[in-house]
Amino acid sequence: MEFADVTVKESPGLCRCCLSEGCYKDLGTEYLWMNDTEVYADMLLDCFDIG
Image (cartoon, rainbow, N blue to C red; front, side):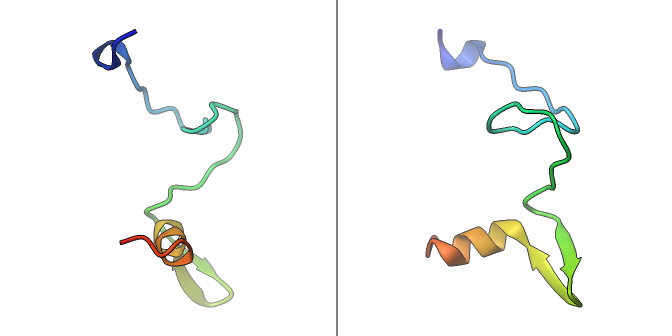
């Protein structure tokens, strides 16, 4: 299968990595946790020293 033949559809409630159903958060969205704003994508970049 060629990569050009792959179609990716956005489906709310469906994990983009493993396609399991559930309630998943967007990595780029700001979330409030214990009066602190967090962005999960930034947390991953910091954790793995990427960028």
